[in-house]
Image 1 (cartoon, each protein chain N blue to C red):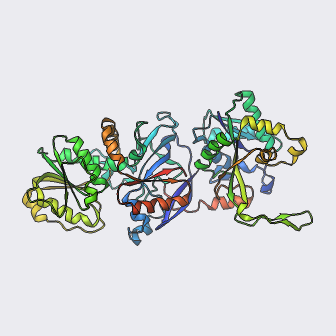
Image 2: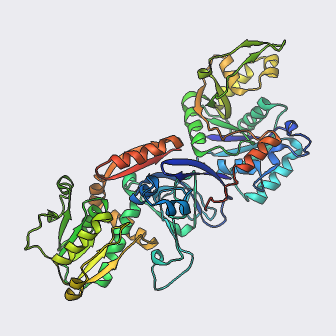
Image 3: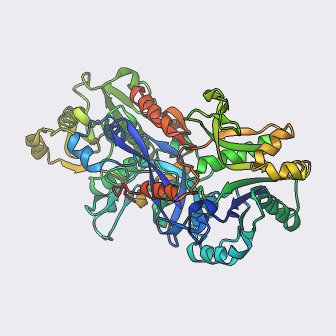
Length: 341
Length: 238
């Protein structure tokens, strides 16, 4: 068959490409239904990744957060019509020690490898996870982002010391919201403190124990462990503030992607004996864990519905830039594309 | 029931001196008709997918389906008719005889030589056929359309904004299609090359859904070359 792939060829310019594919004897074909725009996609769309990176990676179909329905599975193990979330990480080797999302050989959708903006997406069978039919489609459209947060918390759980009375989450955006919400449910006896820049956004974190503006943090505040979800230019001040307020031997999880070199106070990291762990992307088991978690916590799905910032129906290629522009002008939340192209 | 009917009844007289009907020629190393059938297979709303082909090419069609697609219970290869409308009607008669007809049944008819059809176009055809009973797929006309008389002189230049170029699929309520076809005279049948026109002549509404420029028909050697050229961007990653 001829598959249409809707690819970014230059900043703010999409073109359709044609790909000859055969119905797979092994693997599944998924028809995307809901796609979610990520900040990483926006950096390609707006051209802020820099000329060299764009020259190397484009043309490329964007989007690595999305769900769809199974359109074909010759084995019959996933019936046609089954609702699934698509896993964007594609390992090319097996490693019993290193997680699939850290293997340098793994490929990742919409990062040098076509993303989900296609008529049909062809995936190995272990790159889809079945979704409960009733779970809100707009929320599970960004399940990948939820799985990234879940992944970092699982790593924390395995590596950090056992005193987990107070968590600090830095960043009042989507990832900060998801991470503080998951921590609140996974550690119900612990306090979760949120640190952000924008007063209006902090007001949305109704479920945390305290929400502080980063320039008005009382000197008495201390935390056992921290999750940095700021990213960008804000990474540096966030990490250094964490180093200041965290208790000795605390665990700092860095999730925010920054295009800039970040200077951090290593003297205090040494003095306090801190553990700083980078966390990026996620793998199949994080998707499975996240789906199961959302099934057990329907209230979390409801909270996450408040993250749905805008919904754009995509019927033609001309509708795609509108969704990206809408996302750029949204002050809050995720932009979802209803994929009817 | 929702039926697809892939029209492969033609023998490719416009393709030059090639022996094989154009729907069996290869695009990217695979018969064009297989590309088209695969797009129908991926749409789970089709209960049956009829493939109407010239009588002498039925074995060949079954062979290449078996080779490229394998076993797919929804596909049925049937004999095409003497012309386009007869090919469509052969599909309709086959449905009536084999499965029986219900009021809600619709059929999505599509040229085998339009392999670039998209999921959206098929979805919108099915939805509109269920709602309106007759559907055409079209794109706005980019060129000015002129009507020319037998003497080679222009008789009319219609307003371009109102002009569209017809594509396929064309989709119908099956029962209504039978009624319309039976209601026109043999003389009309002989000159009607378009199934939607039968509906218009009989006073039925036909809904138009938007096609795609690339949903073109591969009818000439030029079309085939152009279609192959669309795949030349080797930077496409899988």
